[in-house]
Length: 138
Image 1 (cartoon, rainbow, N blue to C red):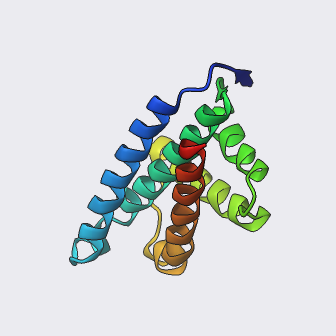
Image 2 (cartoon, rainbow, N blue to C red):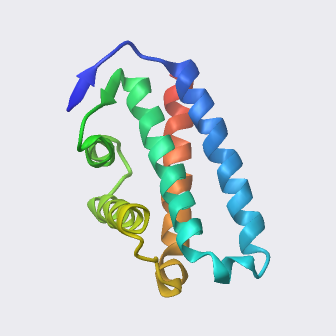
């Protein structure tokens, strides 16, 4: 359920900072051969970065998603931002589903997933960071 709250740009800034730290960590992992052994963990980190950025965007607009479908609704809300496409939202929702299956059912995220999607996920993260930076300046 989406709730109206007071805008909280300070919390949004903190979420952006954490997302950037996680992104830096992922880039370090990708520069080594460790990534081949930890595909599921890397995919989960991608999801955490995107979810944090999406949550920060909601905070800038004065919204918060709560309840059972909070993550899905947070991602769906991204369609309200210019520049985020339906295909990108579908890509994020697919990542959310894969992450949940891995976290809650123990199903690994296979290496071809990141090999095929890393570039798109990086682009989505860049877009979200750019939009968030604009929101924080407004």
